Image 1 (cartoon, rainbow, N blue to C red):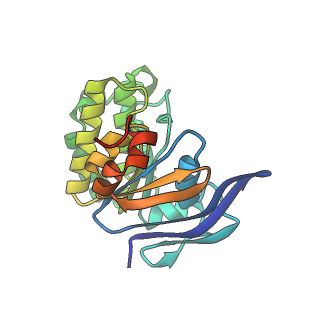
Image 2: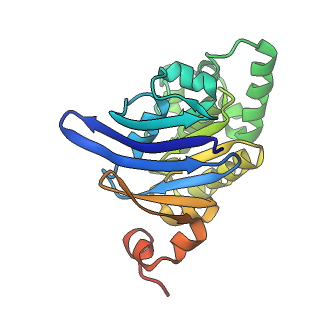
Length: 239
C-alpha cells in the first residue's frame, strides 16, 4: 500500500478544467517529483491533496484512508505537510512565531520543543534569525522558513511547491541538499520543481504533467534519459 494514492482526479476552476484524470502514487520513504510547464496543473494537484481544492471526480487516499472529503486541517493532522509556492511566510511575525504556527495542530509541548530544535538543526540560518520579522528575511531564508514551518507539523509526507524559485544557484544547491537530508531523516517528499534536472537528480521516480494530464511516469533515471522529456524540460535532446 502506497503512502499516498491519487486515483483519477478531476479538478476545475469555474469552467476551466485544471486536472483531468490525474493519478499518481508515492511510496513511504521516496522522493517523487512532478514536473511540467507553467499552467500544467502541478500546483492544483498539491492543493487537491491538501484539501484546498476539492476534486470533482476520483479518489485520494493517504496511508490507506480516504481523505477526499477531509478539511485541510484534518489532512495536516493525518500527516501531510505543504510548503506552498511563493513561500507564504507571515511577514509581520517572527521566525519563531512562524515555526510555532506550523505546529498549531499538535498538543504535546515536549514533542513540539524537540521538533523546534530539530528544524533549527536542519536550518541553522533560521536559528540566527529566530527573533527577526519574517518579511525582512532574504528569499532563500524565507524558503527555508516555509519548509521548516511545514516540518513543524511532523508530516509523514512533505509536499514542496517550487522550493528553488527565484533563488541563486548557490542557494538552490543548499535547498536541494536540505531536501535530501529531510528525506534521509525519514520524511517522504513529493516535489514540484521548475528545475526538472535538479528534481530528477534527487528523486527516485517522477511524473510529467501536461495540460492537466499525466503523460509520462517512470523512474527518475529513465525520465532523465528520455529524449522527449529532455527536449521539453531538460534543455536538449538525448546525447
